Amino acid sequence: MKKIFLSAVFLFAAAGLFAKTTVIYHTSDTHGFYYPRNGQGGFAALANVLKNEPLPYLLLDSGDFSNGTAEAKNSKGLKSIALMNRLGYRATTLGNHEFDFKDAGVEPILRAMNFPMLAANFLDAKTGRYPVNVKPFEIFDVDGVKIAVIGLANRSEAKNIKKYRFVSPLPVLEKSLEEIKTLKPDVVVVIVHDSIRDERHGAERYMPEMGEKFGKDIHVILGGHAHVIVQNKYINGVLYAECGLYGQNVTKITVETDDKTGRFVSAKSELIPLLIEEVGQDADTAAFAETLREPGLDVLVGEAAEKISRVSSESEHKDGPLNDWIADLGRAYAGTQIFVHNNGGSRIDMEKGTITKRDTMDIHPFDNKVVKMTVDGRFLKYLVKKSLLPRSRFTYSGMTITYRNKNGKVKDLKIFVDGKPIQNRQKYTLGTNDYIAFGNMEGWPFKRVKDDLKESVGTKGMRTLLEEGIQANSPLRPVSTGRIVEYK
Image (tube, rainbow, N blue to C red; front, top):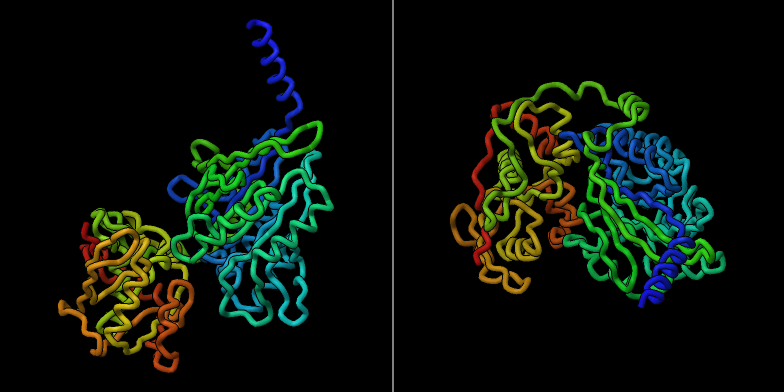
């Protein structure tokens, strides 16, 4: 028995002797949040984590760095690239917000990068070739470990570009995998701007299918877009990981390869919250980030008497006080019976205390204009039913809803406008922001309404309405929720 035990110890030690450890750090959906908020996040904190990493590492990103704060928006993503260059990113892929500035905004981002944009499914519309600085994949040598990284841009094609086109991601992924086999990498990683836990954008089949179909060829898939945290999820042996949003966290993937043969052994992930008290900040990066600050944004707008959250404290209420209030502002401005606010447009909660212009931009960075239209009750039922599960994508002003969730399906749906049951043939005036009105992302049900029936309202954008609402109602307090109620 003693000999067997000693042999086992020797074999275990021998296996460990030939193991080589490499680290991959991964971010996504930073959205221009360069600085810490409430003691967490920011590029200086990330830089300090990297500076204190003793092992060789590769730094990757899954997109959506070009818009979300004043700094990112006003520079059309170029300030984000300046920071990413400084931190030594080796590759990223394209998120949907890299197209917020239309065709003209894409190429300057690509040319400013000191690293490749990996997007196997993104092509020049005229030539059918990859645009400048775009590649399907890249092979990185990290202290002798060959890591192949394939990139896939967001699967939902941007609506406001004509110079570029997208192709189906899985066929080009398969093609890239075949090409890199001849290069004999030790580790294969996919960075993608889609999520394994996407409840809003329809990726729930396509993302798992990558692991199911290509498990023998892929080791790690690093996603984003849905703003969720995923760690150590495996499908067919493939590790999936996502780190959330706004640079609050970074994922650290530890990869083991056989030091003798170079073959992949294992991969596991760890979420590192970028808490300033714990990880610190790199002074040089912090100083550089300060040079990127947009002036004039620390002007006081008003005050919140208490925190105003996007989510209700009542579990059966599927509307939140911040989104309810924004919808009310939109309805008053549009002069309509109903206003539809997309919850994803509100990026963070409104914290208690003073509110600056920067805070309003962080809360609602996309200053979309207001549009109104006339719809019938049948359309409203369709809109609501398609948008309730797995969680409500919209908040409504002037309309209340009750329903039951039975095995993932909406049942016993009741809708009221101004307290009266909705009627199929009755006409109702409805307002929303122009992004939703013209069918983008979660606004796809509005494609049923002809564009020539949609009318612009005034010149003020939603963030202007938010700022004026804060000024007029300061100190602000949360409104009551209960406009969308799920009964058990």
